[in-house]
Image (cartoon, rainbow, N blue to C red):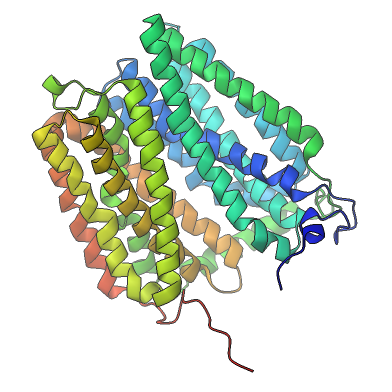
Length: 442
């Protein structure tokens, strides 16, 4: 039965409090969750490239920023022991806002690279902690029906944050570069704008977030007991059947993409004499940060629909092809170096759509492996291995590209298709998993 409007508003909360409507805080909460992640993973890459940092250093040091998300499951149990999740959300938003302002202050400094990297580390750990608290708060503040209803809403606003950071803010930085002629000043202003946005989010959520009775500090819980339960859950994850194959899948499925994502923006920005396409910062914001993200989202939506029809087992190999083969557009662009922005947009859209479609299999397989007694915790461990699979290949991407050049680098990316596809036939997947259940006629 469809949820009625009064149910969605949730003024008569089942949690024992007069909650505010989820519409007043879920969109902004998940916008706030997505923004700092994209800033740390993508915006930082473009900024450092425009500030003259080498591809080797960009890929190495920004890949280390995956670490907080990789080890996030290890400190998530202790967030429950210290303060409420609501407290963690607003505190981390204030800290993230301060971090963004710190980056803005440090950009004009002679030691900007070391200084901003240190602040990005603080921002990344704050963002990962914010993720833990926000996702936990979502489950505490809503009943199961509302959680199901708003899952698409939260995903939509997370994607909007990606477009805002990777698209609109990059376009703003490019516009300021063009009008002021000062690259450092332009990026400093851009980060001050982001800091202002987060300050507003902090102020808004300080008053807009509800206060469910169930969101309280576990003061009577023994920390040693929490640690013991965590160890038991952790060990049970590695005792799962075929866990070795599952971990190989997590680390290899996005092998090529993990390296490509660190070099795509530098390739678009580098001059044509260096083998790149020589796009302006504004053009990259439009091509990679707006059109690319839109097609990434469309691919993900279609991938979810397809998997619900045929199931994960049927779709996993086609999706593996989808996440790997479209990378050939970068080989083509590195060889022919197209001048037409329309052609470049189409190429990037194809690759991003394929990535979005293929990534649906990855998400479903994480859910599949997580099934069992400790589903939530085991899914968190899977996300840690997902971050690891992006971190280590990304660290060497810049060095490899500068050693062999863009053309050979993108050919190597295509060779990384082989381990991705080779692992698929060995996976054991229930034929019915992922299929949308058809109700029996009564």
